[in-house]
Length: 403
Image (tube, rainbow, N blue to C red; front, top):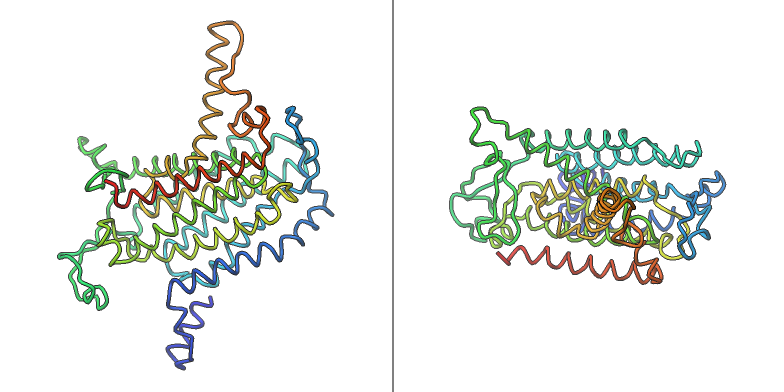
């Protein structure tokens, strides 16, 4: 909204300084500052309100050290994160941009799904929360919407130039170009690193590419959203990891939405995708600000309201930027946590069939609980997982040149 206000003041009244709102870097900086302020300033009030409403986490005793001390800690703190992303994006982003519209819808939709889940757990005293089929249904519904939008919306295109860009051409938009609808994505570490989902169904008489693409979108959203949800098991882990991933995606968004940098790095130029930097930086600020209250010892938990939402919007960002095949690397912490649960369950069932008793690969799943059982303090586990997240982020950025 401020974007439109200052654009109007700049055009109609030539107001001094109003033109600064046309700069993506300025608006991104303002978004991260405002999201931090919202999280820190309003966080305490929301926590106090949750205390008064007795919105406390019910802890199931798993035998972990210090676990039961957290019983009664306010949950549903994800509303703080959602607010701290939503309002800076509304104020500083171009709301006519299809990518921004997509992100705001994903944010609100998954926020509602997570909120209902937490509400049932807290107020209905049902620890199971929202039934799994409804959670999955919410993720599938979002995946369908995102997939169809990215596949069919006329503003979601790849721009190809007829000749290499010079700086003058990039500045003056003088070069010839073609905007094409495409289901191409980026394959990391591969030269000429583009893969078209159309190849998978090219042998069929009828073009069913959209079905394959939408299926990939749904799978990505479900995987990352559930991965973030599973990761949110110890203080600060999910929030800190999400901040690292979001900052990396902000860099990808800036490069993919910039003609000069996309040409230099030989990556897809996605017109208008640079606006996603605003959303990404708001997410970074919200996640870091949430750590003010969520770092050990946590004063509030984000609950499914926050974790399901963070995972979903990260997946949608990666899909919008054609980086979904990079998810196993960039979101490696989420994926490892997810896999540890899958491996534990499958091996337990297999060993029970083979040996007559269930056996475990890990002392406890997900993975962070395994290290707690090993005697590591949760602050050390969180910090080390963050460091792994940073390494994976650097590795992901290295794919821009390592092919």
